[in-house]
Length: 436
Image 1 (cartoon, one colour):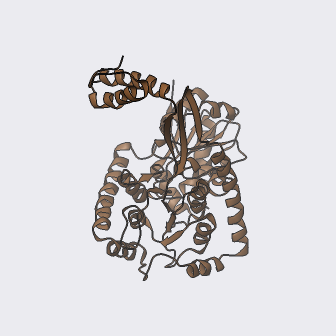
Image 2: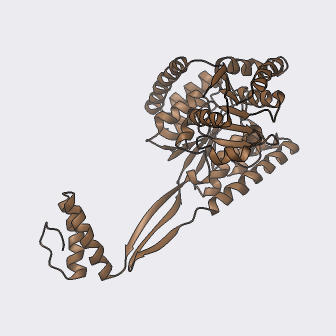
Image 3: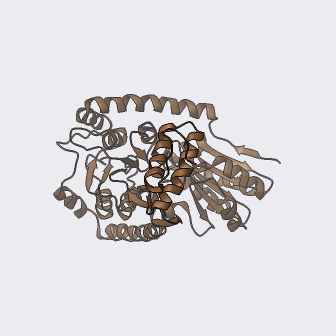
């Protein structure tokens, strides 16, 4: 087995050092919000966004005014994207059914899928206004039936971003705030004098937002750890370097720390892609950002076979995985750790990011090993229930329960079962003893 790195980004130790710095800043900032509430939020908004209005929540007239600034074409495009996302989310919701089954005569077990009662949807808008993130979080929560949907995005140019506001409103947000960064997710999760806390936080963000969600997890639920975007291209010589380079840089432009990786079994494709990336960085308008990401977080991995490529891809567990090979379906069958797959040269990550219908809030930093991305099911809690309808069933299950509780030494537990055996089964079980 020969796996060769023709290019490798920062070593893990340096990346861990960067993470530690972010962690310390977030911890201090969240403590300030928890302690000072609205005052801390206002100070942070002024510091990072130069924005400190009388109120951060938009009124109905504010929302209407913002939407009036969105062009007809842009509004049509937003509605089209939301229609695709809604269609897929509704199909996913329909796949989740409540169940009730009689497991023994007179014993009824079931579960119900209940929406989370309030969610905070963060929509990034710093370097790029992420209009699509509003569809992915707000609209999906709406399809799930969440009764209180709070949405927040930073100001752009000292004002609410019109298209983001439109997408939030059309997606079904009940409250819209103009707040960004740690102050937004902190305020939604912890609550302030003017913002009621939510039960769950969702949405992507930069390293600080992702770390804030991580630290807030437990106090509130979160969708997943969705940090700086990651993209992987798995390709063989069935495609060319221009396609691979374009797909790598298309995601590297997100930020200065957006990993991008090519895994291939073709040395020729690898070397030509490296050269093509250099060429494209001369003409790409966002090259200032993309070039830093590629320099510090770009990898090119050369493997001997598709089996090796699969192993490396599953080990890295990247967020976006673009597969362009002569056996794309084989990868679909065998990939087990990733955020989302984009199969074949006709689709691409940008389709998923903006319009095709699948959700773009996806696991990063190897979280794809244990979770998938945001979807309608993330907003639903599956709660079980039980009913015992006959005396015979109560006595039967109670006797088994009594003995199993005593096996573990739980006498109080056993008595919960024993009292049912006595009352509904007519048996005289000695107190603190196992039922026969």
